Length: 121
Image 1 (cartoon, helix red, strand yellow):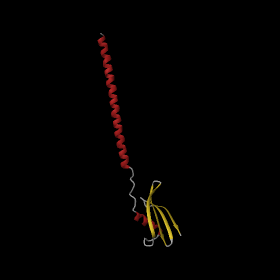
Image 2: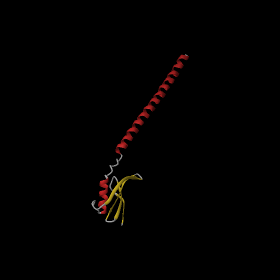
Image 3: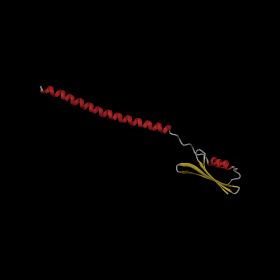
Image 4: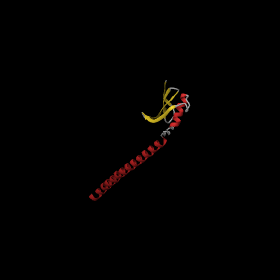
């Protein structure tokens, strides 16, 4: 008679073992799915993120400064520009002389917006 009492207990232990083992497998599957979803989400965020535009050429930047100052390229003396990143902002520093006036410009390298300018006589 003891044989019959042990059988249900063994079945219960076996069932619990299988259920618990199955839960571990489900947890692993869930972790794998979460990982894959995170990877897909990151890829989508990178694809949809705004991309920085290419910097304008020094010639384009110099033309923006000359046009703003109302000076032709032929009248500009010692015209030079250099690219730098200032506090995370890509910009060109442009300077030149015309008619004994010194012009200094800071121009955003991607948009062409004039950030600062100065004229000294």
